[in-house]
Length: 306
Image 1 (cartoon, rainbow, N blue to C red):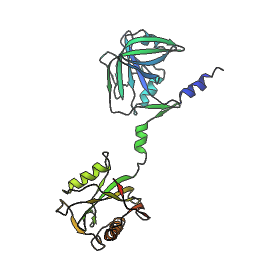
Image 2 (cartoon, rainbow, N blue to C red):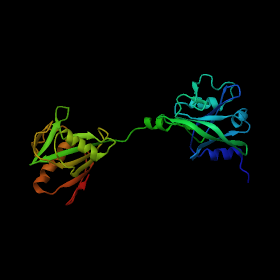
Image 3 (cartoon, one colour):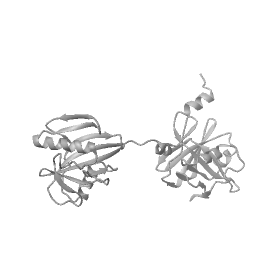
Image 4 (cartoon, rainbow, N blue to C red):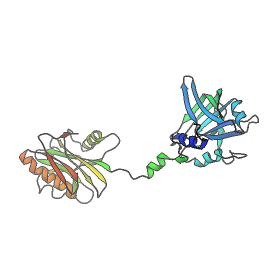
């Protein structure tokens, strides 16, 4: 059964692609171009790529018989350029800033990447012709590329930036020494244990940076609590970190007792340290899992290593 062109086009549209504008110069040196998502890399050595052009295109001869072409991979904010080069027009380059590339073909400003090519081979393929280009120069930028899927544009980076992000992960260092715990100013008129938002380097690196910033020598110890604070949209990981009693760069060591931690502003943190004070006397530690309001303590002879 021969599929209908519309059904086949829809099926091809299920493959998400990038969007390019393929450009060249006619025999009079005027820029020509068309929008295409039929772009693919072919070879690294020699560096080859391919695009296809419809045999019905008015500009087919300029591309198949010319010296070469450029492929401009459009960025997410260039949907209007894609639309311009997809519609019939006497001058698609009107209002579009472009320059000649190192090989000599039109490069569109603001593209995510471009490839300037000499024409290597033309292969007839049904109602299209495949243009294989030998890459003479190229450049990639940090601009996110424009996508195309099921007949619609896809702007993945812009869409991701608008989506609500997950909770920030905050690491808390419970620095213990000789029955005392280090508390620091929380910036709200109360006290807290040292905390830091986990960065791209991960939990371990963030914890060690936090300890180093306090001027203390301590090891990354056992995980003591993992909980979510819905009030602040944060996920907390608290670790017990044994250290030597000394003068920190900020904060002070206080007695690990209910009275000693009474000035901690955050109720969840205060309750956690009150639990630690009791467990320290018994030598039987547990790990808390839950939220800032409710959860459970898992008992065991060993904790989890960060």
